[in-house]
Image (cartoon, rainbow, N blue to C red):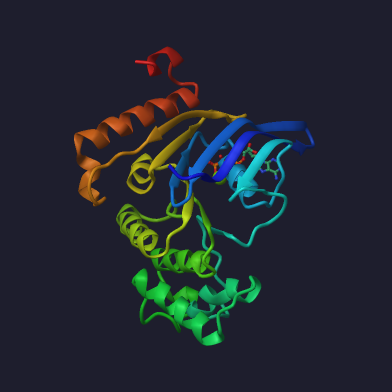
Length: 266
Ligand SMILES: Nc1ncnc2c1ncn2[C@@H]1O[C@H](COP(=O)(O)OP(=O)(O)OP(=O)(O)O)[C@@H](O)[C@H]1O
Ligand SMILES: [Mg+2]
């Protein structure tokens, strides 16, 4: 097993609000090895997006530590790529130019030509060949999300953080995107953290599913996902997937305070 590339240890954090401190995270641990892909699930409002901000270095925890590749995170990191539920693409730029945007911000050794080639290669990989010169509004929601994934990977980040990237898509488009994610991961190795509300998505994409408790969230449960063979959608209908989903569903109920804790031990 390789060394963890992302390591979160004993993180505790509260937001200061007008009504006083709001404890959001308390006892959060997460460890993702290089090349690993962790999904984080938990009740709404438990602190999942807060966790992504901490990993990206956009916020510092009150207590505990966030390490990336053996370095304590103290500020925003260019080696982290992010994608969100609503891809914010700039309407006045073409899809190609939107994808190339991080290369204008993050220092790169690539020539202009190589930058463009890289963006085009990523767009082809997600099935957007031929759409390079379109504007964002000319694309469907699923296509915009594909472009946004390309943009989050164009500068070859070590870590990709996805905060409910497929949450706003219809079920079929979402499943297409899951397969696109597998293709991207095979071609563009990264270490990933995926926040999701969709348990099927979590076991289809990740090799580890972390269930957070209700707020203030701690790491309540960690599941290793061992789906055998290449992950195609049929895997989601096997008895082993059904069992994994059942366990996770039960853990979510515990996190929501809707199931007695003793039952989970069975
Ligand atoms: N900047 C902020 N200031 C104050 N409170 C905040 C801030 N950001 C988030 N919160 C609160 O912290 C809690 C956790 O928020 P967060 O967005 O991390 O949850 P989440 O798990 O991502 O929720 P969801 O599943 O709905 O996306 C929520 O109660 C939210 O209202
Ligand atoms: Mg959130």
